[in-house]
Length: 162
Image 1 (cartoon, rainbow, N blue to C red):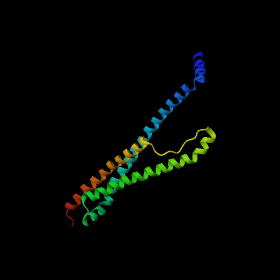
Image 2: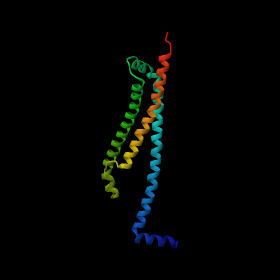
Image 3: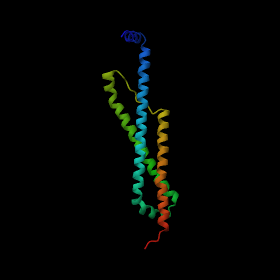
Image 4: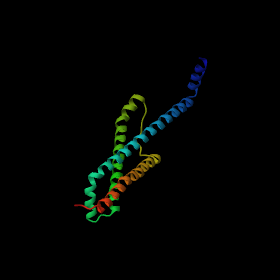
């Protein structure tokens, strides 16, 4: 009742309080979206790991050919890890291109309808840190199939073929 009217009057007098409440609400939404993004990244990396491990059986012959022409275990492991990191880097670049083109397309619409201008800015230090963590994690994920290929090549080299 009367408490709400007084509060509304005070908020009309002090727009800073209303803006503070709005920004604190936006902070909660930003954290929720960050958590959702984290789960999407984890699902993507898990999917990449599963596909890489599933594809190893099809690549056994390729690995055997590389070993027969003198490729070391480290070289083969490096190829598999590099593939995972490049796929992640391509995903990051594609995501950034889609983000910036989406902002570029939405800028005039949002400004016209809501009076908000959303600037296109380069990624900040925090975002670059997240991208670096993603690349480091993809490197670690790439080590799993690389190690598996190493073990398979050892087993294939020791097996007697008839």
